[in-house]
Image (cartoon, one colour):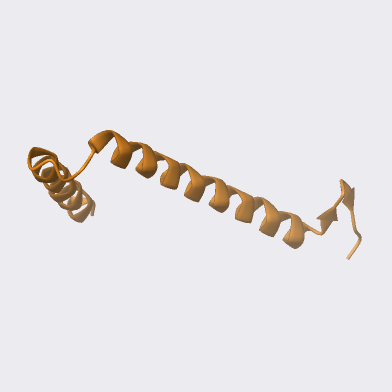
Length: 67
């Protein structure tokens, strides 16, 4: 099931190595921006989950509303 993920990761690593070899890319900047993007996505997804669970459970301000 994860074969496509491993293949994609391998292609990305080879592409980064090629661009670095040709001095077209600064790998440190790419890695730091990728880490920031992934962490922002995780934070956004976590915030969405918290918001949706609060909305579905009817909690606002620490109080439970009777439905």
